[in-house]
Length: 124
Figure 1 (cartoon, one colour):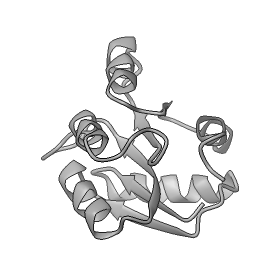
Figure 2: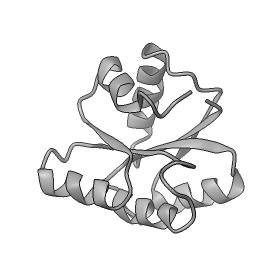
Figure 3: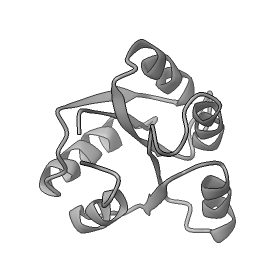
Figure 4: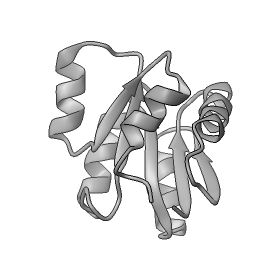
C-alpha cells in the first residue's frame, strides 16, 4: 500500500491510530492526517495517490458520513477503500456508514488485531 489518510478531529486519536497501524504491521508508506471531513476532502484532492481512508464518524465541520458520501461521488469502493472508526456501537449508525459506501468499520477501543481484521483484503 502507498498512502493512507486518517481523518479524526482528535490529534491524539490520529497518533494512536498510527501507532496501532504500525503494531498491526499494516504496509503503509505514508500517513496523512486531517481533522475533519472538509480537510479530508482537501487532502484527497491535493494528493490523488491516497490509497485508503480511515475516518471517524463524529467530527465537527463535516462528519464522517457526509465525508464518506462526498468521497463516493468521486471514487468507488474499489478504487478508494474507506474504513470508519467510531465509538458508535449502534447498528443504525454502522448500517448508515455501510449503506453510504464504507468498506468496513472498527469500533473504539480497538486493537492491532481488530484493525488488521478490518483492513484485511483492503490493503496490499
